[in-house]
Length: 148
Image (cartoon, rainbow, N blue to C red):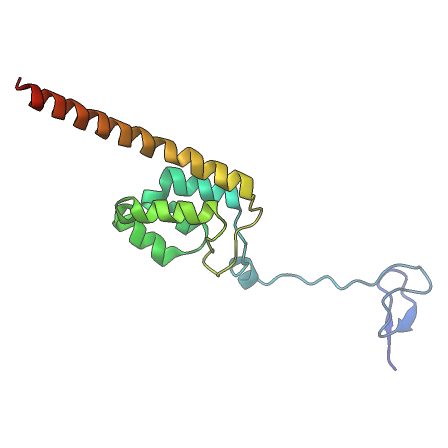
């Protein structure tokens, strides 16, 4: 077996030792990251920012860029989120925990109650528009039936 010198006190110690018997210091190798490692770090994205990006900027595909799905984000950007339909489907998938990031992983910190709440809140504008259409249709039919 070989020996090495303790970097703290200089005593010869066993080559495989993890702690110096003389000064009791831990011998931890510090691994310096390579410059390439900084660009290759895979970060899993969080649920709430992704949901908010999808709701407010979904027609631009910002939530896709945020989660690492760059090609799909570009397609959504150029098609305005599939005329909003594709972006809203993504939003629904995010709310119910079915959305995957660019590496196929689920979003971090998913909260089912918050997701369902966001989905229900997102229905409010659609219900308002539906009632407006029905009201205008009712007005049109009553005006046309009275002969005015």
